[in-house]
Image (cartoon, rainbow over all chains, first blue to last red; front, side, top):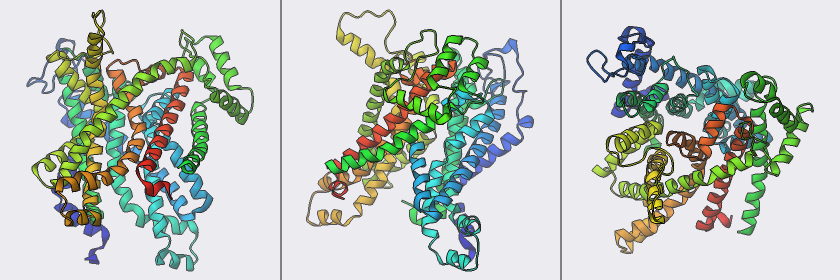
Length: 282
Length: 324
């Protein structure tokens, strides 16, 4: 059973999980969408057309047009770039901070551990959405600030996970062996233990991407996220709210884009969890 | 029990200081001092308002002294005065907005428990049945659904197309009913959608949580014992199993408080409900820093309070905890 190693074995299990595979395919499809957006979008997402303001879905505009006559389908396709960027950069930041603090905390223990874990407790007391809004109010709302803020307020779960892994891994023989060979603490933490603690981090990263996408879309919807004219799924929905009495299509399609994207990452994440640790499967 | 309570309260003190410290750091995160940012970004702010803020933080003093000044005022619930034209005390502005936010959150918590527990129990006792599969799909969609989008769709369906429910505010404008009952019904109609939506996010998580807890408890030895001595299945499930499966739910309930409070920004803005979330959103848009800081700190304290209540209820419900 173990002749192929953890990752190959897990991948084999993942491939058998139909839900996870469909999530994975959807994620790949979204990647293609955002890389090929200029080719796939039928119109320029910023092209204003005063003669076709708020026109319902038709053959010419499958998702209709918005209050400036811009093609909604093209804007939804370009919007996938924002969600991809936000998802990966924000989660990347969260993972780097969380893995670093969790590793230090779990490896050294003692007062360092206490200090870091109390810090985690304090951060968890803040309603995350409040914290993000407060920071955005102090800085400028821009896509970069949003990615940083979502990352900086979202690392606590990863820190706890990595710490828990370190607590059990640091007592293992391979760590003792590395120490006996005279490896430095840093080398043991980042080259020996951390690679062995990555499986749960990967799962929480995949699920974190969907959380970041939901947060970004909510911020953009409230007008404090990605600023117009850059199209993001959230700010197309703002147009939907402003025209709620006359243009249902503005509210409908971008929401489906968010729903399916988040669903895809969640299915993939849950599948990864089951594949990496079959014992956990309920 | 008393000793436990005291211990629990003492543990809250470092958290309290942590919260204030982080809030203070957030405020000073802005490039330059908070007042510099004010003058550059918001031409509406008067010179007096800037001077007031300078005095409030004692900006000519070293940072740790500034923090102590702010902390001393905070203990007295003095968050300074709002920058908005009304120039009122921040604590007054917030306290008149808090009740409606708390009412909506409590109602939605109640709704979550009312719906999620039966769903979780039924899908656990009927594992792999059609009902279980249906709820699993619902849970996945529930996790992935942006609440504000669902709000928009429900507003279009019930508000615009069917015209059954009002889509904004807390009461109908220009509506002068003759009796309190009609006023009450008007209120209820305005609250249906907001409560439903703030509950929606938690519903998926809770029903899944109850389900997995039930599945775990059902395998325990005392359940086998209960069955072996011939108790009817109904009593085994609802009396022996459910009570144990619900214990950890209390903790999760406490942990869900920050999410609910944070979510209030979104649905209070969408439905134009004059609560704390809407005030927060308005203050963020207007860069009304004293109010932003006040709500940030109070939001964190409400979370702390939620966790405390959850821990105390847990220890009341589970003797193993309080005797440890």
